[in-house]
Each structure stands twice: as structure tokens, then as C-alpha cells.
Image (tube, rainbow, N blue to C red):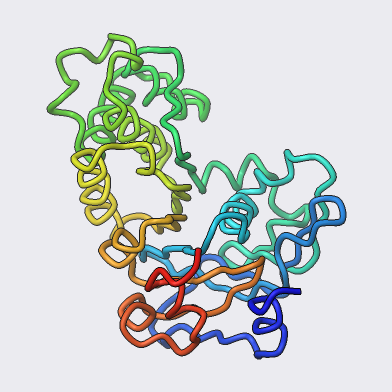
Amino acid sequence: MTLLHERIKEKPLTIVRNESWAKPIYETNGLNLWYGTSHALKNIELAINEREVTAIIGPSGCGKSTFLKTLNRMVETATDVSISGNVTFKGNNILGKAMPVEILRSKVGMVFQKPNPFPKSIYENVAFGPKVHGIRNKAMLDNIVEESLKKAALWDEVKDRLHKSAYGLSGGQQQRLCIARCLAIDPEVILMDEPTSALDPVSTHKIEELIRSIKNDVTIAIVTHNMQQASRISDRTAFFLNGEVIEEDRTTTIFNNPSDKLTDDYINGRFG
């Protein structure tokens, strides 16, 4: 057992509860997850507040992406997964039968590390979700596509080539298109798994500006390895290590006055 493992085992979990005015949209209680016999998430107690950006940080393999994919149940597509505990979305347990996965994913969009536009036109990428949900009126679809692309700060760049292939866009544009595709179904939450790790600094800046511009309309949980990014764009930060939440608080507190030495060591590059 490493010193870090011993340090985690002997120290009670530090969770700073959300302020009284904050309203959680997600809450996890006693969440445990295993891949076979590998214990990937350990007794996770964490809330994600409405209309805030929550950054999830920690070294590779610490459970960040697994946690994120649990929130929309994508983790269940992996083989030999078992879960215990509760994950509630707006008070409803998403792990039970009360909320079908299709309903959950209509409310919770996801953006991945690498842009993954559909092999369709720019227009059809954005219109895909609304069509799945039964919208067929062209004027309505046109309006949804335009508004979604504007929210994603992409409209001015693509309005003259909406019916061209999405593969003709740059990597940064493709990622913003994927965000527009999420916005088109009017989600309540967008989960982002390292959405800028494959992008250049200019594209990264545009995605960060986009996140700031939409956070009053949609809740965002973002996994990132970039400490500067987490400090720039998030309201709250949760630090994961070895499948546990070591500390969670306002981002300014986590980065300026963390209560756990492990948090301080990670943020300042002493490990990870």
C-alpha cells in the first residue's frame, strides 16, 4: 500500500456542503462502482448544483470519467459493471426503474474528449436530436439549428455552409458543433469529459468562453486535467483520488486555501 493510499485510508473524507442557496440537480450518496473486482468509485458523496460549472479534477485513473459517465448511465455499457448506492437527478433515483435511460439522456447531454460529429451535414447534426424527439416542422427545425449554433458561438462561422459535411470543420469547430447538438434538445445538464484536451489554445479559449456564456441556462459538469482551466471556468471543484472524493468546495477555496494537503499537493504539481 502506498503512502497516498495510507493517507486516504486514515483521514476522514472532507466534504464541504453546498451553500444554503445552492440547489443540487444531482446528488450521489454512498455511490460505489466496480469493474469486475476493481473498486473504481468508493462511497462518493457529491452534489452538483443547478446552473453552475462543477470541475472534476484528479490524476489519470482516479475515477473522474467513470463518475461522469455514471451520471447519464453510460458507464453501464461497459462489461461487468456493478453499482451500489444512490444517484438522484432532481430527486429521482436514476439507477432504478423510475427513470428510463432514454428520458435521462434527453435531459443530460454529453461532450467527449474528441469531437464526434455525425457523418452528416452541419444542419443535420444539430437537427438530429429534435427530429428524434418528434419535431418535423422545417421552420421549427431551422430556428432550433440557428439558435443552438448561436449559443455555441458557431453560427457566424457556418451559416453559409449549413448543408456541407460537418467533417469539413476544424477540430475546435467540430467540438462546438457537438455542444450545439447537445443544446438543440434543450438539456438541463451537459457533461463534458475533457472537451478541450485535443484542441489548440485558441479553440480551447473559445470553448471556455462558450461554457461561461451558457452556464446560466444549463448545468455543466466538466472533467479536466488542466488546473488553470478548472480555476478559470468552474464555480465548484471536486478533487478525486484513487476512486474517492478527497475534497469538494468553491473553486476559489480549493485553489487558494484547500483543507487537505493532498489537494494542495496535486494542484501545485507535487504528484499526478
